[in-house]
Amino acid sequence: MNSLIIILLTAFLGTGCGKKDVTPTKTGPVITKPTDTYKDPDAYGTPFTGVPDTKDIIMYEVNLRSFSAAHSFKGVQDRLDSIKALGVNTIWLMPTYPVGQLKSAGGLGSPYAVKDYNGVNTEFGNLDDLRALIANAHSRNMAIILDWVADHTSWDNAWINNKAWYKQDGAGNIISPPGTGWNDVAALDYTNNEMRTAMIRAMKYWVLTANVDGYRCDATDFVPDDFWKQTLDTLHKFTNRKLILLAEGVKKEMFTSGFQITYAFDFYSSLKGIFAGTAAPSSLFTTNANENNTLASGGVKLRYSTNHDVTSSDGATVTIYNGKQGALAAFVLAAYMNGVPLIYTGQEVGSPKQISIFNDDPIDWSTNPDITAAYKKIIAFRSSHEAIKTGTLTTYNDTNVIAFEKKSGADDVLVLVNAKNSAVDFTVPAAIQGAWTNGLTNNSLTLSGKVTMQPYAYLVLKK
Image 1 (cartoon, one colour):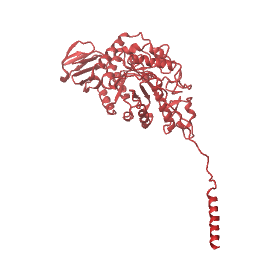
Image 2 (image 1 turned 60 degrees about the horizontal axis):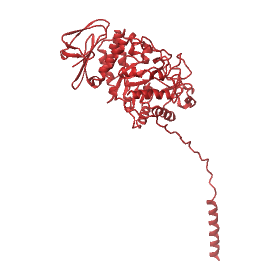
Image 3 (image 1 turned 135 degrees about the vertical axis):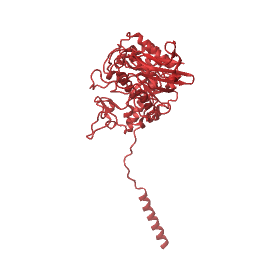
Image 4 (image 1 turned 180 degrees about the horizontal axis):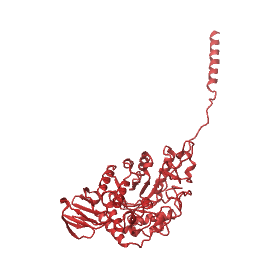
């Protein structure tokens, strides 16, 4: 009997425990993370195989609003042969995207106030027109890079709806880039990873959708280095493409991030000061050396005597450098001392216009054919001499003349420039005395003792 009672109790307790085990457990709602449906666009066209090595780049900046009366992609396409004839192998198009409606600077608004990173400004044409321009440039063995604005957007960019993507003040209001006065744009916040992802995807978009060959990136020092590293590492995953990457910045970290070229702001300032008579000729050598200290292995500077910012603020080259001859002399220094040379819209015809990026102001391409011919000779000589591109630089200090020599193996080039508006004498150092050939005329001459140079004259000599 006792055994039977024990068995019954055990069965009862076991049944009770079984009931407790099957009581439903209360849980919260299941949250499903939204699926990221992004997919890279299909690649358009065939990647261009003629992208030049960095040392060989001759770059031309196109201001679409001033390049032609039509201020369109077609207007640029119609003059590709003229650009090519200069000796150019890389074209940089100023921003091609729709422009924001807040035009605090007046006129048509700043092309650097981007309303849609994936759009085409109808002022210039449509996507097919841009593709046609790029394809036609490629057929002439010229690369094309787009301008990219990563620091800020227009106030009516669709991204503005994502408030967390933008910098804000203490009251939570989106702000313009601090300390710039650029009131027509809103500053992006690079602590936001969603925004970073959207930016990178937009940059990939144009490489794939329009077959572009790289970017000139605006105000790169305003944007965190790690973003550029992340972005350019992503772009370099297109292993079947060679990209040109130019940073409008000066930090050495830009090269670590993946850029090949950075800006030579100080070189331009020194150049302008020398031609204005406020700086000694030798100051250009100091500036060159200081800028070279910001270079990483394989990196170079973009050297220019003008660009869209310079022309807008300081005037045309014929104004800054006191005439056509001075403009040419300044370009020789920018193109030959070190780095990659740049030509800006209208520079090659000595246009006197102080072009504003905010308005249509077409260039008259029929002016000054003599200065165009001179630019062609200067560029052609550079392109055919490795000494100028990568040679060892030797400088010769002189109170009047900017004199330097570049050597690469047997290639030996000597450059003399008078940056003064008066005739000056150059005392020839013993190291460069002897027989030379004028690289632009092929005339022979012998350097000895003293050379008298006319106002803004330049001599390009070769052994």
